[in-house]
Amino acid sequence: MSMSTPSTKILDHIVHLTPPGTVDEVSQQFRDLGFNVIPGGTHAGGLTENALVVLQDGVYLELICFTHPASHYPPGSIPRQKRDSNPWAWKEPGWIDYAFLGSSSTSISKLINARAKKEKSMIRYDAEVEGGRERGDGKVLKWWIAAPTREHVRGATPFFCGDITPRGWRVPLDPPSNAQHPSGVLGVAHVRLLVEDQALSDMIANMTSVIGKSPVSTTARRATWVLDTPRTDAAGGKPRLIISVPEAEDEQQTLIERGEGIYEVAFLVNPGKKTGQTRTPYGKIVWLHG
Image (tube, rainbow, N blue to C red):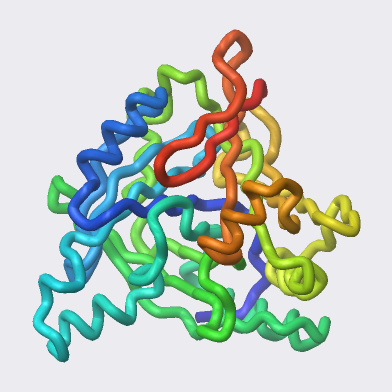
């Protein structure tokens, strides 16, 4: 990989986990919420499978689950070791992670690590590893993943996904109907993460090193960045990334139960479509007019 300076603030996708073997069930749950859900496939290694909600801004929701519970694999076997070492193996169902768009030609990990060292923030990324997925039509997708090192909470800072094969294979915006939703959803309005009070300042420093920009607004309780999206010609504004401490009792309880990470995802919708909040069994969704 060569060294250049690609953007490190393009929101690529948001990951939603449900129990093993439930990709069909969660697909129907999201259809009932007004999303158009399209088939995904099985990831390389066969441990996980997914379905997709593709948005007009080029961001997508990955509805992912493990294909089998851990007990399916014999203790001590290589498949069981791979299952247990998966970064999402011990996550509770719900919004568990998010990705920024990476690069197929530049080492994002080296770029961020050099930036973090210069800025004296603590975030570090492991070197890129190859990943992939086979679609239902047999097409094999490949990409590079750069993820935070293990001492950082997975899901609090983003991982990066850089396509080796065309991104359009991974995120099928063609035909355009794939990104048209009965709910009128256009794109992501914001992703809000919860962190402990004592961790906020370090998280702001870490995220600044990841994004390469300081927050556009900062208070004693939250910081906000403006992100970009893969499509620059889509309707609606740019998504916000918000990191905050709990601001209500239910948020404090969520942080206790789930740890630091995504608390809510908000979507821009067409005027005249529903707005408000929806609490699903596995996460909070907010609807806002674009």
